[in-house]
Every structure is written in C-alpha cells, then in structure tokens.
Image (cartoon, rainbow, N blue to C red; front, side, top):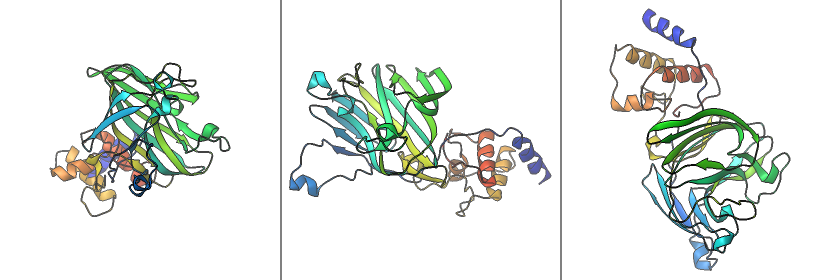
Length: 312
C-alpha cells in the first residue's frame, strides 16, 4: 500500500487538464430532405434529437453509418450556383439540446474530408435569432471560445495548437485527406431551452463566398460529443464504442471511487492484470491505452473537479 500511495502522490504533482467526456449512449442517424410536407410524411417524422441530414433546395447527399463513423457523400452542395441559398443547404445536425446560462460545456468532434474545403459548426437556437449576448442565437461556434485543433495528413500532425478564437465568424479550413480532431470549451451567458448542434457543409452564397465542399466530396464524422461540465452529464454523443460503459468504474460496482484508482495504480505497477472490459473502463482519457493520463483524470474526478471521464 505504501508503494501505491507514493505512486499516486508523485502523480499528483503532474496534474494537467484534460477536456471533454465519455459516452454512455449511442444515437442512430436519420435522413431528412425537408421537402415532403404531406400527412403521410408528417406521421413518419424523424426524431430530430438524433443526428440526421437536412437538405435544402437542390442540395443532395447520401450517407452510411457503421456505429462509429458517419460517412457523407455530397452529391450536390446547393448554394446559389446550384439553385440554393448558402452553406446551410447541406446540414448534419442534432436538435433538442438544452443550454443553460452560467454552465460550462465541452465539445469534441472529428471530421475527415476527401477534398479541400471549409465547414462551419455551431450550437444555438433553431431560428438564428439573437438572444441576449448570443448573436444569431449562437452560444458557440467553431471560431469561438478556447479550442484545440489537431490536424493529420497521412498520419503526420500538421497543426496542433490551442487558440482563443474570440467571437470571429470564420469557417474552419480542412485539406484533402486530412482528419481534424477538435475540442473546445465555452460558458453560456444565456438560456436556450431548445438548441441545435449543426454542421453547415453546403455551397456558396451571400454569407459564404467560398462555399464549403464541392460535389463528390466524402466527409466522415466521429466522436461527436457535447458535455455539460457543470452538471457532469453528457448531452450529445455519437459512437458505439462508448455504449453502456461507465468509465472509471474498473471493478464494475456502479461507482467510481478510490478503489478504482488503486486498481489502475496496481496495474501500472505491474502488480495485477486486468480483463479486457476492465482495461476499456480504465481508459478514462480515451486514448487507447492505460497510462498516467488516466490516473490524473481519475484523481481529478474523485477530488470533485469539473471533469467527465472517458474522453481525450
């Protein structure tokens, strides 16, 4: 036990802050072209609280979903050149999100593209009407708040930076063959009882002179998560890997406590072995391995810090 205590005490000196959360739920993906208003269509209306595609005017897209990755083929991006309006002609979105004033939130997502392009992602109200300090109803967008973006091309990190975007409205650039892993935090100044998290991926128009992606672009989305740090709960998640897993509960007794920290410590000291399920629950930093990052996050959680386990 002295060896364990000494090990944990040493790790306490290298505490660091780890963003975002784990997931216990898996959302199915729905398609919606937003054009059929018949009674029959209304009776089969999709559940917009799940991730789904929304298309406007002439825009067209197809998708597949394997439970971990949402793959979209843009067949027609819409926008003014294609009989549409702007970047919102192709959307990937999830609605029914409640945002509370004074709460701190964390966001994570991954996006890959087969072609050069741009995207804009935001969390805000459904009608884009300004509410208090939330211009156009947006409490967060991809150029707002403190953000970390890691970008990979052929397995090589090209950009890895922390940036305070302020309130700029610029879109995020992505290059062909690139995967961007983004994480961000923000605190909301306003209440939005019914909000949405949406990715705009469509064509150019008055608000989007460059457009987002050309026809034929294949996009992949993974690890899309929104967490309320204040209430320590996950609001949105996508990814089957996390389904019904309580990260940090290594002994599987329904609680995350000091005994779980002891178990990880013994494992890292090579005094015990873990089952496959225990290893998965012990990976609280969600990086595919058990290491000091997991110890640090677990210690923060048990201490009562604002952290939710199970994510990078």
